[in-house]
Image 1 (tube, rainbow, N blue to C red):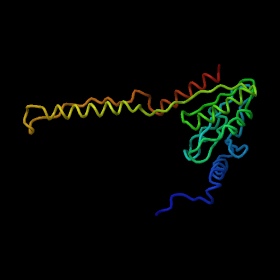
Image 2 (image 1 turned 180 degrees about the vertical axis):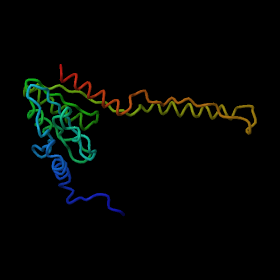
Image 3 (image 1 turned 135 degrees about the vertical axis):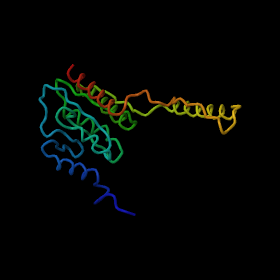
Image 4 (image 1 turned 45 degrees about the vertical axis):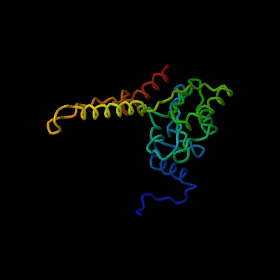
Amino acid sequence: MAMKKFINDPANLTSELLDGLVQCYPNQLALKNERIVVRANPKPADKVAIVTLGGTGHEPALEGFVGEGMLDASVAGDIFAAPGGEKVFEALEMFNRPAGVLLVTLNHNGDRMSANKALRKAAKAGLNVKEIVIHEDAPPRRRARASTRSSRSARSSTRASPRSPSRSRPPPIRRTDRRSARSTTTRWKWAWASTARAAAA
């Protein structure tokens, strides 16, 4: 089996991954308290801080979004695992300011649970924090089932056609599983535009 990656010790994988990322971009990123990737050059304190969270293993997301004009901090969890709520609260407390903190949460069960725990602690501590949830872009399953029904209907109508098999053509199948949601790129642009509006408010 061909080797696809170098891993010194699985127990240290996440910490080494983050250390390596920060060492590659020392002028843009810094690492705080082992799991919080922040901007090397913080924005002014009178600006809203933007924080997110999520598991590692998706690089360059989410730590890749930290930088000028985007995130102020990303709280990293283990590979494909959300960080704990305590660590998220730690980041919110670290960036607390009069202008407020915006927490950008992906619509994943683990991320939502950790974010909710951190938000409850932030509310008790009196931190000025608001949350925006970025929704998934996967189409509902019912659309796929509708497409299957359309395909079956088309096949049955073809079999029932009185024309000879050599001349008959199946009727065109209308795609009912076409996603009405925006593309992933458009969704991210919309999410960051919403974030910018919220930060400016």
